[in-house]
Every structure is written in structure tokens, then in C-alpha cells.
Length: 338
Ligand code: NDP
Ligand code: MG
Ligand code: MG
Image (cartoon, rainbow, N blue to C red; front, side, top):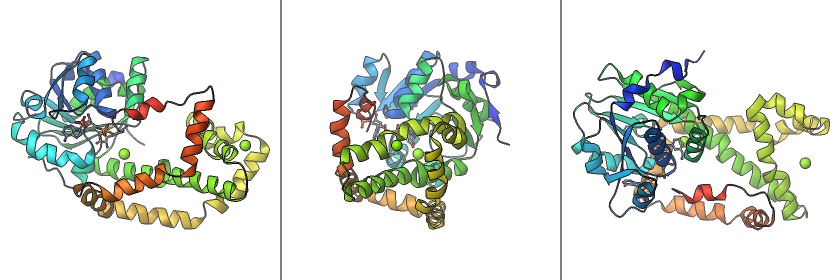
């Protein structure tokens, strides 16, 4: 059984006695910096010169500094720039300026797991990874709740790394919900697998195929959008509240029967074999290598894939439909940091 920790297990005063530098002010960066500040922690946001994030952070009352300056005094450095840029930021701006014994924090284990960042042994290396988008991490905190975190220790130079990480998790609201102990390896591999096979990759492809099947059969694209995309949120909310059983309890018997007989036809055992290949590419480092080598060239493959995704007909139909209906999705959420 997983080890789970709550507010009472964590001592907020540990992180309150430290100076924290948060590097980056995007999706996770803004949420961590603001939640830490509101929990009484001294925070500075480290950003590169000319960054558009400087004004945003300052408007919200936070101190900002160039990355080199921000890390000089910091006891805890949380790296929340995009994964593909972290190794350069670390080697050029963080490592040469870090205080002896400063703790290095991550919200995803990518750079440690695949060896792109190799901190010297005199630093604590910790992970506090919220299991939700940054904007939710901030919103939940403001509402007095929190997003669950998973926490891991890669290096415990101080002997206090675990208590420090739990204290950080408390300051961003994580222990209000619950914090699960993991390792950098487990977090990195399962996080990449979840987003590739199910949450992002799997779901996006499933939606696109469903939409294409209906439209190619002559149905209206607007109707297809509702049936394969819009309603997904309602179903996912039920799954989130009470598992697949609650979802099946709420839908009609017709839908439930169709779920049992057609689900396994659409997602056949071949899909599970494909998932195993995806997992294997993650474990061997082949995925990381492909991502980073494309990013090092400026991301030509990434840009092309993004362009193709945005050009799919369901995106145009959806954008028009969302303008016409009184329910509004949280479109403003992804204009920030992406
Ligand atoms: P974002 O893409 O939102 O980060 C953008 C921020 O990083 C901006 O403030 C940007 O500033 C800054 N930045 C980019 N390049 C540099 C640089 N060279 N030097 C300094 N700052 C830079 O990142 P995310 O929040 O999505 O991800 C951060 C980490 O959190 C990653 O490790 C990710 O895996 C992890 N994570 C993310 C989740 C999410 O919800 N997105 C969920 C859980 C974990 P500028 O204006 O200069 O570009
Ligand atoms: Mg991820
Ligand atoms: Mg229906």
C-alpha cells in the first residue's frame, strides 16, 4: 500500500525558514510561487532577461531576479522551466551560482531520470510533483483545498530532505489533499506513460478517430463534436468521483451495455501490446532522446506535429461552437505559459 501523508505529517515552519527560488513563471511556476508566498515563505522568481513573465510575476507582487541572482541566496531552488531547457539553465546559470548545500527541487523527474542533470552529491535532490495542471494547483489553494502531490528524494545530503520536501508540499497545498511517496524513476516513467498512452495521446487520438468516423459517414460535424468531445468532460467527472462503476451507474443501461460490448472491440488487445511498446521506449530512454534531440534543433518535428493537430477539422468546429454557447470552457487557462 502506498504511503500517504497529510497536513499533520508536515512541518510548515521548515520551508518558512528557507529562501526559495522558483525558476520559471509558467503553468507550475506561478502556482508554486504564489502558493509559497501565501503560505508565508520568502520567494524570488528567477527568469531570463527580457522574459515576458517578469511583468506577470511583479504584477502579482512577487520579487523577480535573473536566474543567476535568484539562486545565489536560495536554500531551495525549484526548477519550473520547460523540461527540455532545464539542463542548459542548470549547467549555465544554476550550478555555478548555487550555495553549498542548497536543495534542488523538481516537479517532474525527467532530467534526473535520464541523466541530463547530474547534481553533485552535497545537494538534496527532491521532487514535489502536483498531479494536476498549474492553474488548478493555484485555484484549489486559493479555495482552501489542494491538488495531490507525489514526492520523491533522489539525494539526501542533509539527512532532512524528506521533511523539507513534505514541508514544501504543505506550502503549495499538496498535503491538504494528500501526498504519495514515490521515486524519481517511478514518477518519470509512469507520468510519461500516462500522458502518452491514456490522458493526452490516447484520448486525443480516440477523439479524432471517433469524430472522423462520424463525419466520414455523413453526420454533421457539430453533432459529432458534441458526441465525441464535449460530453467527455461529463463522463470524466463521474469517473474521477467514483471510478468506472459510478460512471456506469449514472449512464443509461443502453450506454452501459454498449460500453461492455463495444469498448473492447475499439480498444482491442492490440492496443495493450502497443502500450507496452510505448512503455518500453520510455524505459530505455528512446522517447527522451527523440524529444531532446528534436528540441536541440529548435523542435522542427514538434512544431510540425503541433501544426497538424491544430489543423484537424474538430478543432475548427469546436472553436466556432464554443463561441456560440453560453457555457464557456476555460480557454484562458492555456494562453498562459504555453
Ligand atoms: P512552462 O512551459 O509553463 O514554463 C514556462 C516558464 O519557464 C516561463 O516563465 C518561461 O519564461 C520560463 N522559461 C523558459 N525558458 C527559460 C529559460 N531558458 N530560463 C529561464 N526561464 C525560462 O512549464 P510547465 O509549468 O508546464 O512545466 C514546468 C515543470 O513542471 C516541468 O518539469 C514539467 O514537467 C512539470 N509539470 C508540469 C505540469 C503542468 O501542469 N504543466 C504538471 C506537473 C509537472 P519566458 O517568458 O522567459 O519564456
Ligand atoms: Mg508530465
Ligand atoms: Mg449520447
